[in-house]
Amino acid sequence: MEMPRPNPDIIARKAELVSRMLEVLPADAVISDPSETRAYECDALTAYKCPPLAAILPSSTQQVSDALRICHAMGVPVVPRGSGTSLAGGALPTADSVILGVARLNDVLDTDYDNRFIKVQTGRTNLSVTGAVEEHGFFYAPDPSSQLACAIAGNIAMNSGGAHCLKYGVTTNNLMGVTMVLMDGTIMELGGAHLDAPGYDLLGLICGSEGQLGVVTEATLRILHKPEGARPVLMGFDSNEVAGQCVSDIIKAGVLPVAIEFMDRPCIRACEAFAKAGYPDCEALLIVEVEGSDAEIDEQLETIMAIARTHNPVELRQSTSAEESARIWLGRKSAFGAMGQINDYMCLDGTIPVSQLPFVLKRIGEMSKEFGLDVANVFHAGDGNMHPLILFDANKPGDLELCEAFGAEILKLCVEVGGCLTGEHGVGIEKRDLMVDQYAPQDLEMQMAVKDVFDPKWLLNPAKVFPLQSSESHRIAAE
Ligand SMILES: Cc1cc2nc3c(=O)[nH]c(=O)nc-3n(C[C@H](O)[C@H](O)[C@H](O)COP(=O)(O)OP(=O)(O)OC[C@H]3O[C@@H](n4cnc5c(N)ncnc54)[C@H](O)[C@@H]3O)c2cc1C
Image (tube, rainbow, N blue to C red; front, side):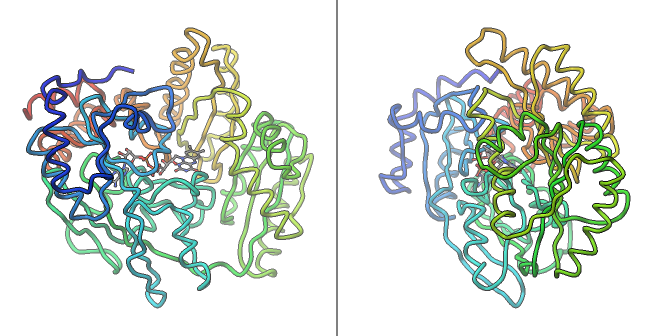
């Protein structure tokens, strides 16, 4: 993966940078020793690594602002970082950049159960947001599988989703306001504890902007009443295509489960070995969950299971206890980790119209043979958000490149059938050069013009999201 050449003048001024940072941050919040900066050399896309010049760990919005002002004045690029779980290389540093980690910004600032919101600092982990409100009967809906580790900061930057987003929407549908610091240190407020806002929807623009426009330090999030009950049902099928058709038919019928998750045989095996979830031995598995009172659950499942029966399932089984449901979800949520124990893999994240699932699954199977690399599929089928995991051998010369070429073909296929390059993981470095397959040149220019407004020097999160040549020419023009 090509990255911009680091600026030697900035590297030569490292001592000055560190000394100026120490004027606004405590000593333990400034990391500059190469043995320690290595901890920030990559995110969860571990195929690409580069230690940053330094890392800083502010603990207030004001400290973020002071630090950014210094970087802005010195022309130092800044890479915002939450927990570093991005699968798209979104938090990958360059050798002349400063990592700005928000892990120490992790307080709950306000909870309002009457008006159903919580205000947190964005270094707080996703799961601990629900942890802060659950004893009052509330939860925060977006539930990435990485929710134990990933931070609200990264969730906002990537507009993250999860298994239960079919019903509740992704981060943007649950975000009410942010405090954000611009590259020049300006602190701004967008949205708030109210519905909608007059003027342009800048909050919508920030959610999913991948650390390109500002550093988000605080967030007001919508919290919801926990449902009365929930019940998953396991559906096993003879082939991926039939399972895909069943998903399409459930969605077409107008019932709205809270989640429809898909796994193929390699994933079923890996997850079963890992979590002993009670998954059936079959080619393709759907986990379909509905919520409500017992009567509501029974009624919804009756319709859904009738649809499944028309596809001759090899297994059709409702969970019978809370423990069994928890095991079923543990298996699914451990999928990436469980596969990682067996193989190196690259996780893709394309989105397609649900009706295209059978065709795209079939084409991925054919392409797997053409490229000679196996694929495991596990994904949020209800909203067509696919995660093919391409299996490869990181120690075999040429395998990573072959895997990247295969991945690019799958993502192009997603675009061809009317979908898009990313559902929830973002573009990062991984998909930046494929943006030309999604957008016309004038559309991309319009997006880069937005970056020009928020970050005129192009210092925030370099070399991400836009094709490298395009972003480099904007950056050079801004010098
Ligand atoms: C095992 C595993 C499972 C996963 N499952 C899911 C899933 O189900 N759904 C899903 O959506 N994702 C999933 N992911 C991907 C990842 O967890 C999400 O993208 C997550 O939102 C990243 O959060 P983070 O805090 O780790 O961000 P990081 O990796 O630190 O950063 C991600 C991006 O956010 C930017 N950023 C970070 N902090 C800020 C800030 N304060 N202001 C502005 N920009 C900032 C970074 O520059 C970068 O571009 C998974 C990852 C793993 C490893």
